[in-house]
Length: 113
Image (cartoon, rainbow, N blue to C red; front, top):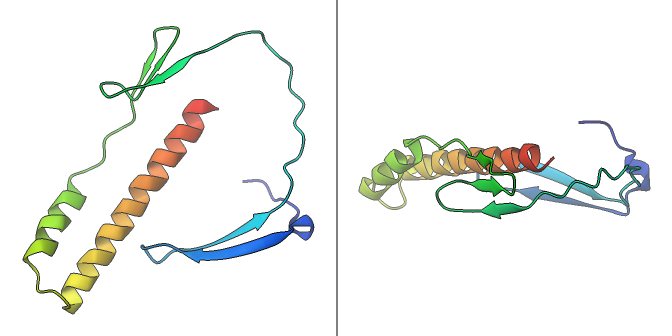
């Protein structure tokens, strides 16, 4: 991504997610973007069978995730509560979940852009 001037940031927030990843978010005003209208209108519908259906009859489907998280959930259910292996499995599930969330967000950004 392009470098943005952080000197004009009004605040910063540091967060850590369940997968152990650290994030720093800066708040600043968004730059104005010059756009030329095309006059074209597109409607979108979020569905169950297809992820997105456009008004032009095009269907967009997001790729499915693997069964690895389901396998880890079963493994977690059999482990002793409070054990180090259970904690490691919980962390592995959190990392897979974070990857899936990142994949969904990325797909939505690419599709809507």
